Structure formats: C-alpha cells, structure tokens
Length: 204
Image (cartoon, rainbow, N blue to C red; front, side):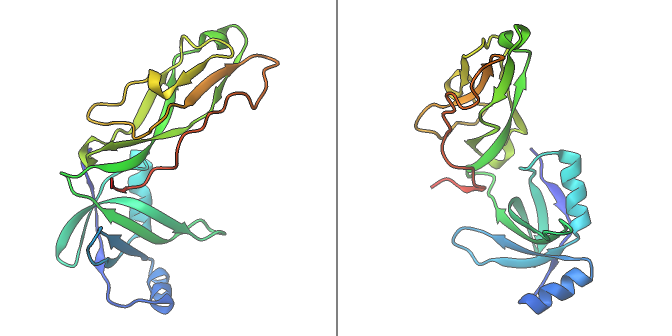
C-alpha cells in the first residue's frame, strides 16, 4: 500500500482558542505521535482528508504528511467530529516505520452465497473486522471470507481462513465470524466474539 500525500502546515499555537481560529479559517488541528518521540503539531484541510478517504474507502490508508520540514508516513489514530455537523474538528495521526510491524483493524467481506442461504436461511455476521499484524506496506484493504459451503447452524471460524500475504492474526484463541440461521433460528446463538479492537501502533 502506497502512502497518499496530504498537505500540512506546522503550528506553534496551542489551546482551545488557537484551535477555534484554525477551524474558522477552514483548517483542522492535527497531532502526529511517534512512540518515544515528541509530538508534532500541524493543521490540514479537512476537505482534502475526506476526499482521500472517499477515494480509498479504506480506514487504513497511509498518509504522507510533511510538517516541520520532515515527511512522515502515518495512520489515522483517532478522529474527533462535531456531533451536530459531523465535521472533523481534530485528528490524531500515528507515525509508522516501513520496517516495523503495526496492528490494525481490517474489514471482513463475505464472498459467495452460503449453502444454507440457498436453502432458505440467512447469513448472519458475527464479526465485521479482525486485527492483523504486518508492516505498513502490507496492510490489506479487506479480507474476503468464502462462505459458500456454510450450512444452516454452522459457523465460519477465524481458524478456517488464511491470513493475507505477509500478515498474521494476533489472537490466542479462535472465534466465529459468520453463521447461517434458519427461518426460526435464534438470534443469539454461538456469538463467540474475539479479542479487543485493533490499534494503529507498533506491536509490543
């Protein structure tokens, strides 16, 4: 995955007042973090950021951002939005190194039509995302899960799918991803959730 360039301006004024002035000027405050290093403060055009993610349709799009005279490759760590307008009001980025592994959350996508669905059942999603561990350049956009052989009341488990190239699943136990429920199938059967959500930082 190649990083997408986004323009930025370094900033030295902090606090709520400075942030309000930035937003009034059509800019969004950004903080770039790096484990063990000082944070870099900058601002970006939120419309440019939104356009990048609309084109990529990928939560893990790598951003190449230059602020303070140095280019950094980053993942979005946290986005704060205005609860009324949904406009971005603050952005946290995490700087990544091409040689280091990160743990990120990736969308699951079922592929094919389940055998149980053909018999009148309904495919039920138990898990919409999973975490993977890999280098930034190997982050998959999504993970396809073949459900064609899935019968009513059966489950497709994490252990039954192969991790994408150059990635691993960082879980100590197995869990369910999809099932097919019959016309009268219970909604709560066999959920089997996995571990916590992914984080865009180096694996400890």
